[in-house]
Length: 249
Image (cartoon, rainbow, N blue to C red):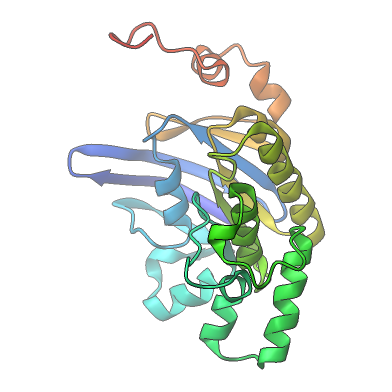
């Protein structure tokens, strides 16, 4: 469903992606791990055409994004839902208004149907009855769930997660992981998550890709990854600094 071929991206002298190649099959749940600033979120932005690569290409269902005009890109983006790192809710809107924002903006559905779809999405993320609350009234975990309800309300084929458990305590993070797994199965969507959280990666990923020095260093199942003897993989999953880097301990 998603194919990336030799993707390269630099910002000034900083080469972030140096030839990323990967394939993600329909219905697969994939996690991308790697160091901060290593290009994980940049890769996600390429998948939905928000960034243009310096070289290489991204294909969604066999269609190259680089050959599309803006109108064609909008059609492809309709296949995606995205949970942003900070949930990215509108503080002045209620939960229901946040979740139904895209449907109201497009204006294709009557309000009664939007209200029903909002209620269904909130029920799926275990937030039934919160429609009238404002984001300031919600905990961090609840805000993440509202963001997820907004991502799935128009029934996307692919859901992207940018650090879904960042800033959450371990118990709340576990509940978010369980929710992601449940929604992937219930909605039969393809899931791509980037995370630093190794427990989360193990729980939600059928396959884990490690991005290192701008390329995919490893592609493995969770069990294979955590049993790996590769020193680069071992240092990352165990949180051990590279002794060759001065001043890092």
